[in-house]
Image (cartoon, rainbow, N blue to C red; front, top):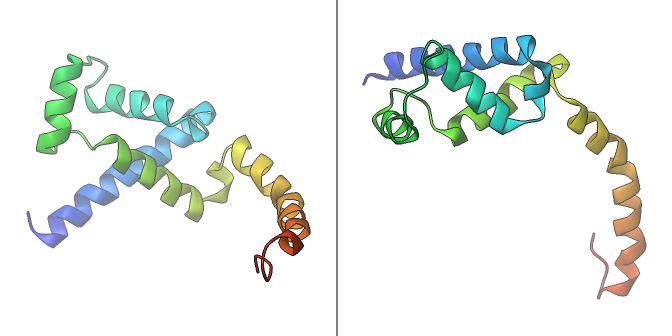
Length: 113
């Protein structure tokens, strides 16, 4: 497969994921749901056996779970409006966690930072 073809396939998968995140907000925080939705779209609503899905992932007819979830993160990085509630919750806790870590620093030799 040429680099151009590979890029085109990658862009197509990424666009499908973007569309799924737009249409199904629950999939923004749930990779299992996103993979199921992607498979449903990939197989036009007729999902074959689990074994066939695995074979199709191995042969490239269906992207692997890791590829789908990695591309979800990439889409959400470039389109913050497609981030889920978990992202906002974790971001909201960020400062508290930083302060907790700094408070623990004197306990270790020379601090953590």
